[in-house]
Length: 251
Image 1: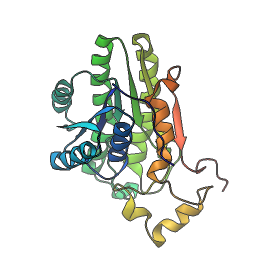
Image 2: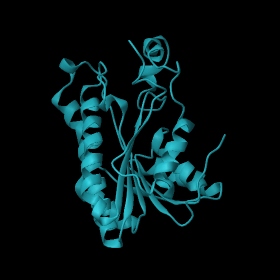
Image 3: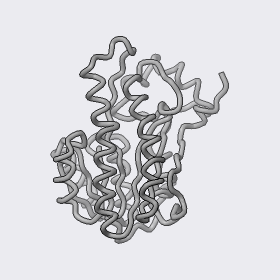
Image 4: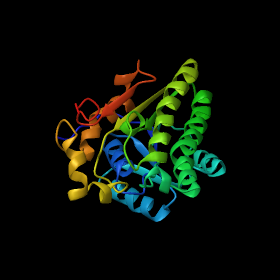
């Protein structure tokens, strides 16, 4: 089943869209729903290929290089994007090691993109939205922001920060008619974790998911379209968990 919403006329910016994970999938879905999609990441050739694909199926898209960890790059990218109605704050990375094996560089790399980068994008997007009378920000968090998981140290810490950043910005930005919500996916097969989850190594984790399977990208379509559309016009500060019952599964 393919879900869509009427997002005709909406200009939506998606960060972290260069890999075959959430960002590229979100961009395709939003374009199919009628939005003009502005895809951003550090790797411009991958973005240009995605834009070409979207345009070939009748969608509207453009690519802008943006390094979310670099505030100057974010400001330059936002200026190039122009007016946006919705910002999908999705860029993220992970370094999978036990806590005592994580280096300072590992920590700075993950936190720089996942938390500092998310803050940079959200606040710069919000400045433009405030001037235009409102907007919509959707952050990509994770269930690891709620629950510990071995080997995910800096990633989990960064996503816990994204969860509270969502609530904090929702409170402060509501007066400007800016909504801020988040998706908290469970374990999905994507570029960022495919090696970790595939094969026998991922089997014990799969068994801890109540629905006994990993998420597939279309499982996020309904929650994303809810938050991206006027169907969520009275929602802000909300976290939508999409995890197959992982967080509620008993030990």
